[in-house]
Amino acid sequence: MQWVLRAGLAISCVLLAVGLVMALVSGEHAAAAIKLHSALSAGTLPDRVMALGLVLLAMTPVVRVLSLVVIWMLERDRKFAMVALVVVVVLAAAIASGHG
Amino acid sequence: MVPVSLPTIAYLVVAGLGAGWLGAWIGIGGGTVLVPAFVLAFGFDPKVAVATSLLTVIATSTAAGSVYVGRGLSNTRIAMALEIATTIGGMAGGLLAIVIPSHVLAGIFGVVMAVTALSMLRWSTVKESGHFEPSETPVEGSEQRGELAGTYYDELRRGLVHYRAVRIYAGSAIALLAGAVSGLLGVGGGFLKVPAMNLGMNVPIKVAVATSNFMIGVTAAASVFVYFGRGYVHPLLVAPVALGVVGGALVGTIHSGRASHALLKRVIAGVLIIVAVQMGLRAFGVNIGR
Image (tube, rainbow over the protein chains, first blue to last red):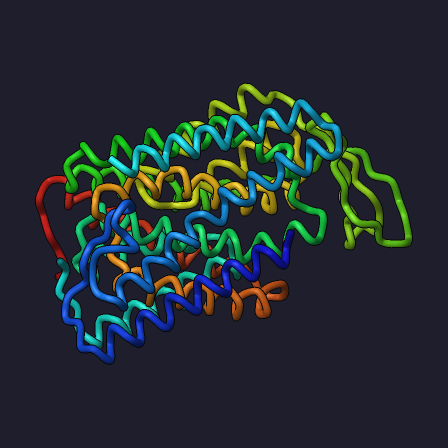
């Protein structure tokens, strides 16, 4: 699991760095806000690259919890697989509320 | 649209480096330092500050987590059990923050900061828990299946510590509050979670800190999507800080271990109180210092 996390973080950082450099090179003078549902489709290219990095970053904890559901089911720990599943449901609700 | 200049970007990176380093070094940093910096020094809207900070909290949690979980210190079962409450709180906090006026948010932040500062100064009690079993050879920590219990290897005392968490419902109540505070103010919430686990639930301090580190990322994720949906995330602002925080945390982790924390904590607490007052005054529309 650790290397997955590190890889995810590294990719996010690369995207953020590349996007930031692109934004500076293209002379962006203002920071635009992004919305979740249009993060990857609207806005300048540098913003979209950075947005991808941020979405990836925000999803990392979600992936961690999902992996625990799988790991615990494989370990036959039904109780905690259910616990983790409840957390996933709450996170899904949070993501859904962000699409509003 | 927030106007941004090249110096601002550079300052944001520096702010991130400082916060990441501080957080990795003494465990207080991240949101507690960044949100006031964003509001008071950079002039961000408090909600933008919170959204930006939450993303850096996720970055720190992920970066630290890969270290802690590997050492068998973080108890993922306790984390998930408490996260049911924390994520609900986080989501609620985020939704609440959207409707609360920004200056009131700043005021609330001031109050919470003052409490954090006072707790740093006066109360660093740590409870030792668990059953100690001497063992010369280091063993990897583990969790008990189906239980809120586990084992970790204490390198200092050279032995295994077997622990069991209790009072999960009381712990969850505090976790709910910690989640709400996190979603509302953009902080990690560790200053509530660690005492809740260590003092309230009989979790050894090292496990409590490691587990909290894992938890704050999940909690921040629950609330950050709420902000994402309402246009408070600005990539051009977040990117430099996030990169700074990751860099600072890496440096801070190499650095940590030997430093004397007591004096540093007093200095930090002092700064926090000054900043808390400034944030508090914002609630009444008073702007000092910028």
